[in-house]
Length: 181
Image (cartoon, rainbow, N blue to C red; front, side, top):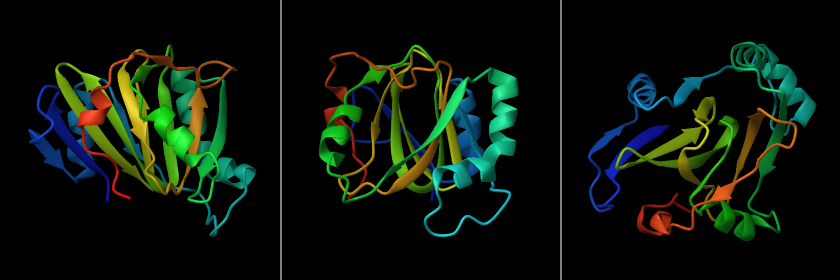
């Protein structure tokens, strides 16, 4: 179940707000200009769909975002526990960074933990199947896919180059809870 937990950025020991209610999560995140919504496929995907099948099932939702925000490209990423680069990628994503564009992810299946650092707080958003999150450009954040990652997500980009990170060098992510293994 999706969740939002908010901490002070100076005290990782005690949350200051928590919810597992999708509407409450969306309302709280909208205060910091983070989009959170739920999508539904327009067809059944089965247990191991190909990328083109995933895109086709959600093209109606993608088209709405493209019309609204002008995204130029999208793709599908899948990560599984047996991926040979999983630890290297996890370590990279766990480092606080920003992007010059929105980071838009829709979880087709599985889960991931987005952690945003802004306004003196850490917003930890557990995204699961059917969750869309859009982190605004230049927002300090990190992503935890867990030690045994298992997810498929659609990524949307403002530019053709895709994901370009600018690492802050701050080790703040080390102090906050991680995705359970």
